[in-house]
Image 1 (cartoon, rainbow, N blue to C red):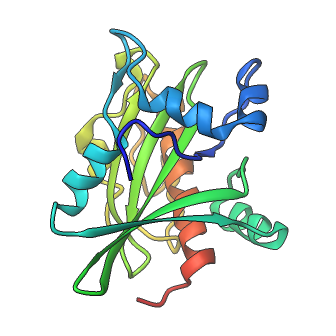
Image 2 (tube, helix red, strand yellow; image 1 turned 90 degrees about the vertical axis):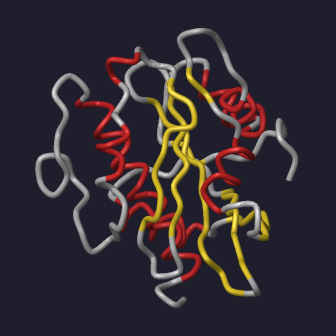
Amino acid sequence: MEPGIGVPVLSAGRCAGWGALKRRSPWLLALAFATPLGARSQTQTRADALQRVFGTDARLEQKNVFLTDAQVDAVETQARARLEHARVSVYQASRADTVVGRAYLDTHRVRSQHATLLVVVGPDGRTRNVEILAFHEPEDYRPPSRWLRTLVGRDLSQPLQPGADVDAISGATLSVRATTAAVRRVLAIDRVLYGDKP
């Protein structure tokens, strides 16, 4: 895995201009979000984030999976969110032949701009880490790290809905909705691909 190489992304957003790019080349879209786009955008590379989350001693393996129509339907039903692409990249981390987690990227539209999340799921099907890799909306709309930490340890047995089991954030309603939808989407993908087995 090389820094700067684009990866296919999971996307929930639709807007003019981006739709054609997403359909034609999710690789280019991912590369756009992996590359700093200006002073307002705060980004970090996928490689740096994966190394920080799993450590330098973990062995990382990228798996590209094409979901069947039935799997896409199952993901959307369990996540209660739309899945734009059937192609999914999974970054699986192992130590001593034991899987310690799987990381996924989810790029979605917040208001008029996009954000990319890194969501790590443990072998138990629960979130281990949720962080923002790129956020192109104004910083006022960016969910704070302390709020993102409240999404750790969650699984699909919980609604993960703002105002229900997840706190809402005043002034960042759309960001919170987009983030929780992304986490549900990743958890559903992981369950469909790997079930609940360690």
